[in-house]
Structures are given as C-alpha cells and as structure tokens.
Image 1: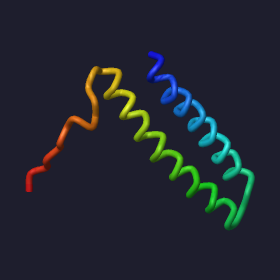
Image 2: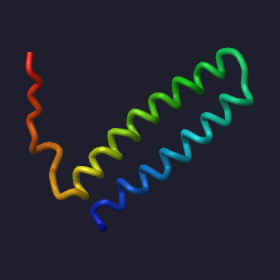
Image 3: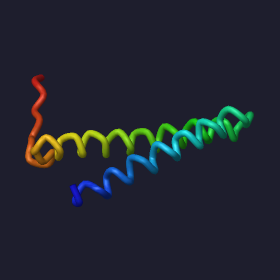
Image 4: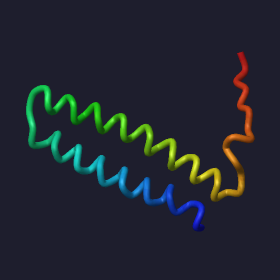
Amino acid sequence: MKKNLADIILLIVGLGVMVFLLYLTAISAGWVQLLCILGTAVVYFGWHRTLLRLGWRLSGKDPDDFDFHFPG
C-alpha cells in the first residue's frame, strides 16, 4: 500500500484540480473559459492514465509487462 500512496495522492489532487478548473470554467467567459476547458482535458488524461496504472498494479500486474498487439 505504501508504494501506491503517491498514486493515490496524485489521483486526489488531480480530482481537486479538475473540480477547481470546472468551477473557473463556470464563472468565466471568453478565452479564459476555453483555457480552463483545455486545462481540464489535459489534467483528465493524465489522471485517467494514473488511475488505470494503479488499477493494474492493485490487480497484481505490471502494465509495462504487457505488449498489446492489435490485429490489422
């Protein structure tokens, strides 16, 4: 659990930042609103990647060990 503590803290902080950016989006207008939406998207994709990696680690697998091949 101690090795996953940094990821859990990162997820909580990322969620807080996304809520704050969405709040700023709601009260702002114009180009500031656009920047807040883009900032939320950037934070979300990093947050989602961390969430998936934590899920893989908690299930006992290392996401770097898998080589995903898509047909085609």
